[in-house]
Length: 281
Image 1 (cartoon, helix red, strand yellow):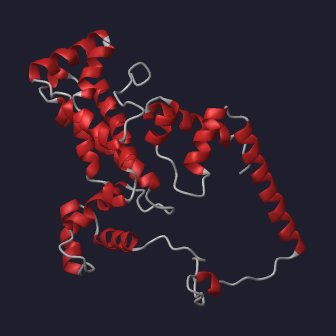
Image 2 (cartoon, helix red, strand yellow; image 1 turned 135 degrees about the vertical axis):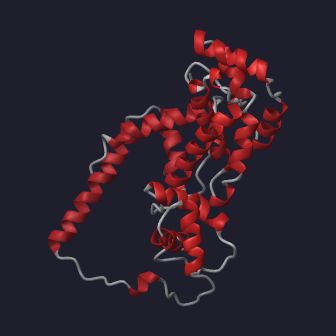
Image 3 (cartoon, helix red, strand yellow; image 1 turned 180 degrees about the vertical axis):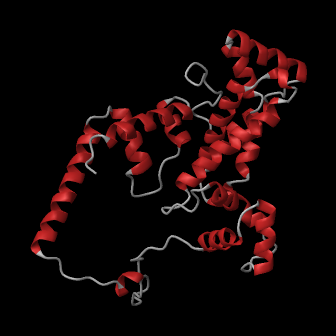
């Protein structure tokens, strides 16, 4: 459905304009929702599916706001939520007696959760089901900013049906930060970064040669992989992954190329897949 139906996200719009636009789309009555849902389910009517999606885009914006505390672009959170919304519309059964908004919330949150977990930190903080549950609920369940006591950890564990050990471990992970081993030094002060305390034994010639060869292979593989991409795909990868400044958002690139942010996401995914085969492990 995502390939044959484009979301109403004008490429030249700012995020604020997009939000104002989706808030103007009227919510559907139950009768209208049922009618459009049956048209999509029985006839694969793309226009009916589009009506279901656009009338619920404001819901995605609302859900995405709850994840701004993870430091990820609001526009990208919305875009991932829109993907979940389209998946929900594709699977929605009007005969179950449930409104689409209730059914779609699970899919919207699931897509945003996956995006947050993939991009929040360099080191993954949640991989198992219980860890994911803790990752997205521990902060709201804590009664203060202080470290959990054993009694509080037990209460959280009972609430989420996980072990006390998992609760305490996730609190430790969430309280940590990505730290540069060699941060920049300002005002001429002496650096006491982690790099200053790390052992640095001299490499023997064989190790040095092996490292240099590996770096050359990786660099040449990356260069070759980029050269094999078309100009648009290459620019998208460079703007999203290889820039030294702030990475471009999907909506910024969508505005540049006059397409939807979902289209940019698809181009990016295909380009990354193509590059992986050209870069040595």
